[in-house]
Image 1 (spheres, rainbow, N blue to C red):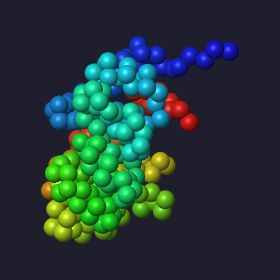
Image 2: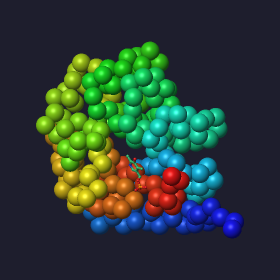
Image 3: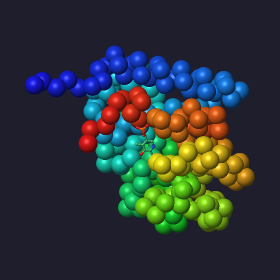
Image 4: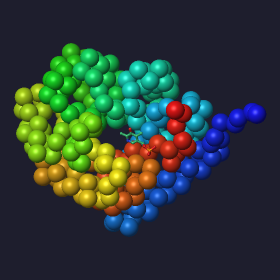
Length: 228
Ligand SMILES: *Cc1c(COP(=O)(O)O)cnc(C)c1O
């Protein structure tokens, strides 16, 4: 049996349009300007043809979870057309590549990484804005700073490492109602004077926008199921 890659280019274009419309609707319902919300298309483990279809449909920000996959995919002319976000766990020994490649690094969550990123930024004289990832559900296996450590960590990022810190990011526990986590993340960002709030994925980005997201990370709603 011949298997066709799903979804087709036309499907991706339709999905992009539908997601965009939902962003506009959610923003308007919350009396927010839709232009202040960045749609980051999550391209991890998606075939190149779907990414190309997304680019053709006008997607201009992408999120990657792995440095190597991002380097392989985004080089040359294709890279220069988009903003690239790092949204996956980042190893300290990849700090150099990350600073070189990404426009935003959303997953700063420990001192060693913050220090390495700051050092690389000095060396390369390139300062992509950074977000602190917060483990809002205090899950054992999950990356991110614990809520109780957040204020101190943000203080050290600013004062000790001079990182260009502009936001917070979180991935709520899969089995929890995300609204509580979204509301907390937004409140902490406000308290800490951080403008950007990255929250909301395919299933809940409209809810995140109502609660103040400035960046939503959407994968399968745009591209269909990922390759395993
Ligand atoms: C994979 C991933 C997403 C996208 O998830 P979807 O449910 O496919 O939208 C968003 N954020 C992060 C950090 C991810 O790893």
